[in-house]
Length: 291
Ligand SMILES: Nc1ncnc2c1ncn2[C@@H]1O[C@H](COP(=O)(O)OP(=O)(O)OP(=O)(O)O)[C@@H](O)[C@H]1O
Image (cartoon, rainbow, N blue to C red; front, side):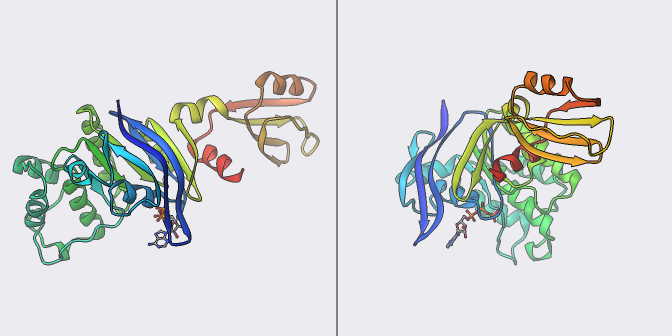
């Protein structure tokens, strides 16, 4: 069952593009990464899905409900963590969380305390006395408190130290075990690789690719390091070489061609060593962006 269904969604800011013609869907229980550099359109997509922005054209549903016409019903079951959290500064954390929980049908004080404890967040401090990272934690508790069926996280880890990031990822895994679906927008590829099942790569407002992490990193592209017997002596070209760097007697390739063709070529050359590895998501990402 699809939790999110997006069809030809476009958002223009007057004449400037925000996002253009996005079509994708997210299944129940998936952790779906949304990656792209600054200005690619991640926040615009999220804000349009949440009905903070009105789509210029196209449509989308969440839980089978229209994002524009039924947004109030949708929001009851969605937890949203914006990339920048703004709060009323003179409120205590606990009061702010109780206040925002009032928008939802369920409020569970025990869960609030547990989440605050896990994240090492002092509920009795005033918002204005919190650091950026601690404000982020308030945003996380706020997003998770009502046990949403869909979590939408826009650049969620900014400001969290590595230990807290781990706690946060554990919390997300627990939500997934409870069958929540998660949209995770980020430009930090290693965390997307660690957390997500599938990823949408967005570039200049358009989807470049929607693919499982496994497929992106395992099937298509290989990272190949060849050491030749002599420095600067060897070069060759083959179809499927996405990137080539030669440094002395070492050649590094990103290669998506036929591995047999490569081995056939190397067989005729004085090579000393050969290393074939899976590329990191960073390398895959750069490959898509350099096209
Ligand atoms: N309020 C706005 N008015 C005009 N253009 C906007 C507005 N908000 C975003 N844009 C434009 O829409 C495009 C997509 O921006 P968006 O903020 O969605 O990208 P992003 O991928 O979330 O980037 P970031 O990682 O920097 O948050 C950019 O070209 C941006 O300049």
